[in-house]
Length: 243
Image 1: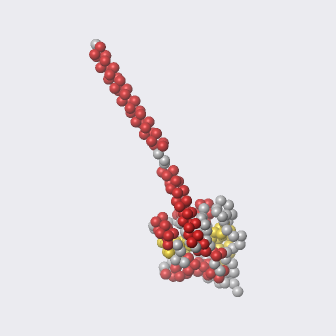
Image 2: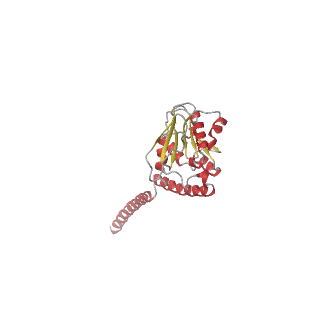
Image 3: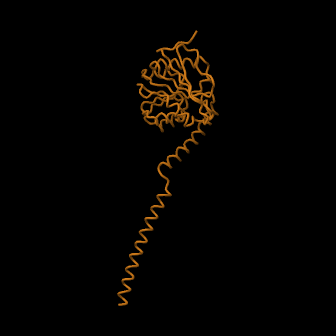
């Protein structure tokens, strides 16, 4: 009898141990899942890391050539989203971005629903061009002078342009060059299509063009430095310089 009771006791102990072990395994898996960062958390960490690296890249490019880089940091997310909001998605044609840098505004355009293969990115810096091709593999990235927009579009066979989004430091160029840039843009776009430019200034970067109008957004105070968006439009197919 004692032997039989001992066997029953051992059997009960074994089953209890198995249950305890199974509960410990379940608890361990739950703990591991809770401690393991979610995909969203990893994505946020990756974006923050990329942002820091991009700021270092921008600062280095600005130190090497301040007149061409124009800014000491990429556009902030709020400003980038605001610029992207001015793009009219229902207009046919490519969306041209001038001076995209590390792609802050480009990403905002993609997030808004612009397909990458609809983007034409014209960037002066070879380093930034390499980065843009990695981040937006389906976009067309052209390395060259964004102020020569007419020549670039001519090389591509004059594709229809829906909108032009500019991150160029326009105030570093003489007024005639700024006027020529907008004239080239409006020649490529349908009447009423926007040329979208951010600026830190209180006054428009381009004036003296016949038939051009502009509107401004609110100030984005969180940007470094604070900036706002200017949307230039023309009611005419070709914009002439005022006499």
